[in-house]
Image (tube, rainbow, N blue to C red):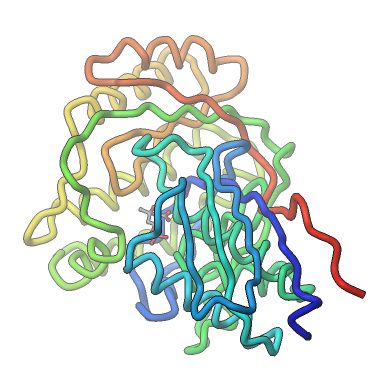
Length: 337
Ligand code: PMV
């Protein structure tokens, strides 16, 4: 593709929440997981990314929420952009801009949505019509969980066995309307700097006596979670999703030195959700590598559950969303003939 045929492209990608988690890599360079994982895609919480190929730029540059991306982030972005340019046969760098619709530090990571939006926008900007598995694989090389943000509804990220990662991508299990759950993010304040997921995974793999059992559990949970989703069975989903999150945090807590992500309010939400479910509300919780808690709840129970969680000491705010579509192209400049 000649430089004149490149064009500006904009994409949106949603964040996603793992129902069975990715916590352990079999290849740290390619972000290949030790186990498959399942997620639900969020609706309007995510990243909007603009890719503008610029023949005069000596290298890719990126602004995230109007600030230059840090060096560690830039290494990953350039790796993804390099792969896209290689597929397109182009040597033109790009100016990149990403705006998060996830408010900063709200307990949801933005790297999954950011890399999913980046690959969808960049593929179009460089004239590539890539299929969904290829987009998912490319997003995965930026951030593992980004492989799932390409997909709408409920996604399964295959572990794969190929050393080059060719069989490790996400695909859809169900569309968003299969089970129109509400998703509540109970934001817990946490002043301390968190250990990054990449560092935390490495620490758990080498320093947690529970790590092997954790991966074995993930392999079983992925099967059970698919059954619970197919049957829209909240009791079963709660058992698998909560058990999986608690097993991941048990593995983190047992790591030496320990990874303690929880705050008192984290435990407050755990108990509240279990009590609410005992009283008949269809809901369950999960927790990523942080202190905030994500609650999946049937639409009819969303209001009372949100109100109950908002009253827990240490909860700053409850963000409400629903199950959404995957990454998509929003706007493109015309391509030169
Ligand atoms: O994709 P990463 O490197 O941000 O890792 C995500 C790790 C968890 O959020 C804790 C679990 C998951 O599967 O999303």
